[in-house]
Image (cartoon, rainbow, N blue to C red; front, side):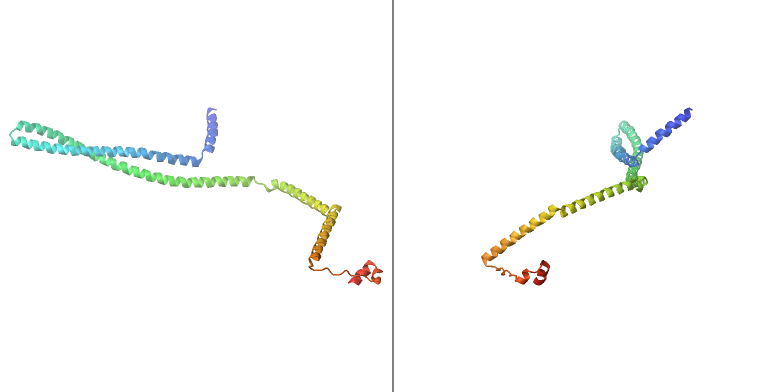
Length: 246
């Protein structure tokens, strides 16, 4: 029973963690962590190189002291002071042992510095390589995410679900268009429209009369004399009179 409960919790929480993991964020954080390690590694390499430099300076000092003691031994021997020469020889031997020990430490420090610099260079190259690879993976993750969203939208989209809405809106628009056309026909064909046309024509006639009056007053374009109907034309009906005028 306990194993089943543990398996249940592992499946539930494992699914939650897996669904919550964002590959893009995790990759970016991994690259940031690697980049943050570079300054620390540089500091470690600098310490190794500093140890190498210190041992080099120590070796130079020991070489100088050994040279000085050698000269002192020779000078004491020339003066016949073997006792002083022995003291210098003892000190010389100690310096030579220290110099050999320093030489071994210097070789080890030099090898360590070379390895540290090589490791740092390789690590920086790996960081750059991983950063480039991570950027490609991020782009692939974004493309995959967009494809997932598109596929979900396409799978959830059903033409039949929205066809009734389109039909309803089409019918509503057609009703509004027909109603507007009917109101327009009613507005332009009613008695009010006809009265408006007559009034507009009356205003046009008044304007024409005033224009003719101005022209007559100014002597421009004298109107022709009105035609006088004969007695026979007066006795004709409207239709016959129109034919006679033609």
